[in-house]
Length: 60
Length: 521
Image 1 (tube, each protein chain N blue to C red):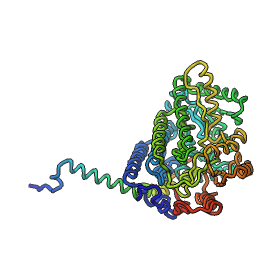
Image 2: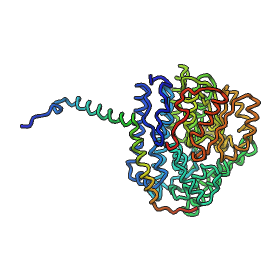
Image 3: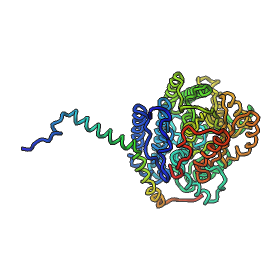
Image 4: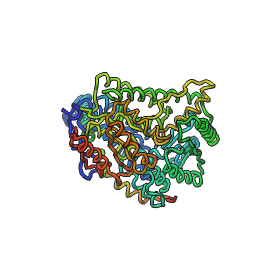
């Protein structure tokens, strides 16, 4: 018979609390250290290169 | 304590060569939690937008869409150092504007022949200029008034200072004069580069502000009419808008524009909808007037970026057509009254009361907030916020239906910028000094947009009048959309030099005096 680990014994509300705290902590870290903007800043050069290869009917 | 205004040196978040800042500001528990919650809302709006496959397709098609990666950073720039009611006012407006632009983009791509290609939807779309009052659409609730230039040129510069350099270079590569205003030049560049969404039953262009604008409209309408088959109406509003004898002609132009829209869309003008919008236009006017009255006292509340960016959007692009803006008008007024009663201040000290005049730099829109945070200069109001304060007819009667054409014409003639840069030197020069007295200002900061021929000719007259009145006049040169000509630091240096050499003052926050933000979004 498999033995249940300690975290599985926790009541549902404690699990919910741990998950919420974890998600909050993660999101707040992203927010406070500006990680969202640091990531998108890395994406920009790739996007600009991509646009150079899009076909366009360029004329006056 | 970071809760206190001015407790953190704001300049330390900048990093040489970086597009973004090192981290966000700690504003004390309550304000940081509030700012964090608004950040989550913004991320939700952006997520909801990009999750749609057609919007993702558009993101990969249009170069200017890359600038929308910087949306949260734009909000951070405009909330720098703000606490309490000021932070809440800024979020109330910015979050609504973000939501409104996201909806605009979504609709553009829905009808765009290259992306969503929804032909039925496209038949209900009337394209409007970015620099145009949308008053003429107030009686068409069944139609969509969509601007292509707002999301492709105007908003991107607010998001990323370098966003329009590519398009200006394209326009010049095709022989357009390089000394023309960069705004219409960039709009023309987007059209030349085949980067404007193609949709709509018809389009309305306006002889907005200047020769540059007319040039840009010519390039765009040629492509719209001759290649895309979208008929364009040229709404020629009189430039001498304060003269009584031009008003009948102006009203007739509105009648013609409405008839044109009816002809090409099959829609019929709805007076009920018009007067509903008129009520909201009047509400916005009353609220703005109340904010301006507060700004005449020792405790200004809705001012600087909070006043400028919102007025531009609400007055011109919305023009009573979106009920959500009326809700925010009330919310801003409530927050302002609350802060006024408590005698609250945006910065720890106001050393100077300034009127900001001229056409402001778009790549440095948060300059107004920098003035407060760095030097304690309160920008009480700016030229683009000093628009019509006349209330329009809002009750549906036979007389008011006739008056409505004159009201729409009045609003169109008095669109942002145009109401000051055209109409004689009374509206540009004389009234500035009236406002200086009304607002009890001791300083005028005059933007010199070097490509704007409408304003450059008056340089000497402003100086003469400032000398007569004994008001400190600071010229700040810029090139509207092009930070390669005068950088953000170049803009700041002009104030720094004046404050140190003429006023002999030290900054409130010295960390903001020189910022390594040349590469920044």
